[in-house]
Every structure is written in structure tokens, then in C-alpha cells.
Length: 440
Ligand code: SF4
Image (cartoon, rainbow, N blue to C red; front, side):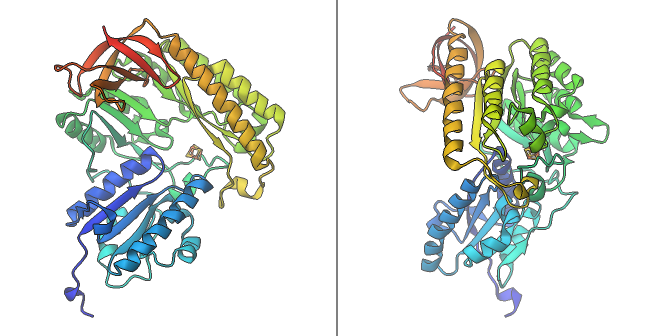
């Protein structure tokens, strides 16, 4: 049929799975589709196009998405004109298996193909439309993502990763490192400041590997700090190997850069760290933590830990427990190892049984709960400036916001306190997850 008779679908429902990078990518996709004339649907049932922006980091994440595709297949059966697409890391990682498991998919687009979405959605025929080419030059730096209103915005500073940790699919599904030009980042940050955003979180898979021409990550932080209206700056996730002295010095001396760092360690065992190809030993990591704490005494630290990596013996696991105790993280994201196809560790195997992985995971979750509780309780009586975000989940006129250390603080509301304001609070009681405060 002639293409001019084709009327493209116009309303889109977008679901996002996985990490903050994916949330940022969905804001980009929303902007691309809005420009092409698409509006957001109120419910998936009403949408002409449904897109899932997916995560491939763990097997569990993929299973969840396959389940969701099953639900959506029923919706598609009821409305045959509706188009269903898969975006993001899983699209890139597993397209062949996906076509087999979900033959009703109309579109599969990897993280470097979002500019082409309107064209792909406007195509006359799908069988399905697939674009998973990785593009070393794509930063989307010229596109302004559509941010959700709020006091904090996550701004992508770099895409991809060159580290190739043995367990990780990211370099394969998101491609090699590339940094967004500083001018594009600053333009975006200025726009966000004008729209009322007070806190910027710079994003990247290894964000502190940022380099655009002469501008390294420390210089980028200083440039962002120069934007009027922005009061707080954070970044995630840095790689320990790229925590340069210059970056530590900038964190220590630039008041807008907040004293909080998510510093993934993954394991406390040198043997496992070497097998993971992380590029540091436990001793080097601990020395880095000591340098950071010497430079930034109020620093809060969080981390990622994987238990049950192939070959992890009980004494390796004990070394992880020991490292957690030594560092005393404020919080930790903990995971059971799951083998991912295409990674370097895939061919090694998966020697730790599910039950043992579960036991190890429960142990470190309980340990971290007690460390977090202890660290938060030690803050009782201290005062902090809190950037107000809005009503707390518990309701009752209680407000919530974050301390400089990225701890959730809740405190009684007041008619004169609006989101975006910074108030001083005093910690009255604490759990492992939040601080209950009074206005100081
Ligand atoms: S640094 Fe390692 S864990 Fe992080 S995204 Fe890159 S390969 Fe994956």
C-alpha cells in the first residue's frame, strides 16, 4: 500500500525497568516521541503504542519483562492495531530469544537507536522492526530529555562502559564509553535550574571516567557547580579505579558537591575481585576509602555487592563480610550472582548453588541493616540542612527530603516550607532507612 495512506499511531505508554540510566533514557525517548507528535496515554489499554524500556543486568529482571510481555500480548489480541515494542538493554542483549519467546513484538530497539523510533513506529510493516546497532558516537547530547517535575534531576553525562567486568553485560548492550559535550550538559543544567530544579545528579555507568576533550570529570563538576540556582550536585556510579586525587580534592573543596558516594566494591576477596576483573584489590579499595574519608570527613558511602560469583568459597565470602564491617557502609545494594550470556564470566560457570547464594545474601542483608541502623542512630542530636522534596509517604502533614549524605529525613510540615526549600533539622530518632527529625 502507498505509504501516504498510512496514519501513524499517536498515543504511547512507556514502562521503565532497571537503573537510573534507563529512567534517564525513557525521558529521552519521551522527548523524541513528543517531537514526532506522540502524546502520553493515560493507561496501557488506551495506547496505540506500548514500549517497555528494559534491563538485562540480571536474569530475574529479564524474566519479569517476559512475564509482562505475556500480559501485554492479551491486550494486543484485544486491540490488533496496537504496537508493542521493546527498548533498552534486554532488546540489545537477547533479541533472538525475544523474537522466539514473544513473536507478537512489533519493534526491538537498542539504547543507541532511539532517534529512529518515530521512523520505526511509522513503518508500514513490522516483522518486527529491529535496530540494535551500537553507535560509538551517539550521546543524544543535542536532545533535551523530558524531565519529571521535581527538585532533583538526573542528567546523563556519559554513556556506555569500557571496563568489561567479567560478570556484566553493560559494555555489550550499551556499547563503549562516550561523554556528552560539557556545553550540552551545562545547557541542560541551566534549563533545569530555571525550571526549579535544585539538585543535579550526573549519571553514567562509570561516570567518573568522563572525558570530553580537555574536560575531565572534576572539571565538569566545577562547571556544573557554577550554574546559578543549582545548590547540590551528586553523581553515580563512579568506578573506584577512576577516583583520581583531583576528583577527591574537588569533592572536598566544592561546597555544592555533596558528601555522598556510591562506590561499588562487589566483593571483599582479592581472588574474586581478580576473577571479576574489577581492576583493584580489597586493600586498594580500602586505601581509597581511607583517602576519601580523610579528605571528606562527613562522607557517607554506599556500595554494590554480589554474592555467589563463580568460584566464591566460604573464606572469600567471609572476606566480603569483613570488608563491609571495616568500611561500615551507610547502605548497600546486594545481589545474588546470576550468569549472563555474552559476558566473560559466562564460560566460567556458576559454582555456588542457589541455596548457598540465598544464605550468603541473607547474611549480608542482615549485617547491612544493623550497620545502617547503628550509623543512623549515631546521628541522633545532630543537625543537617535538608533539601525538601515534598510530602512523606507516611502522610499526616509530614515532609521528606535528603540530607547532604543522601539520607532520607522526615519532619513536620509547615505552611512556609515548600519543595525546593532547604531547612535545618535536628535528628530525633533513626531507623536503618530514615531519620525522624524536628525543625531546628
Ligand atoms: S564498570 Fe563493570 S559493573 Fe560497571 S557497568 Fe562497567 S562493566 Fe558493568
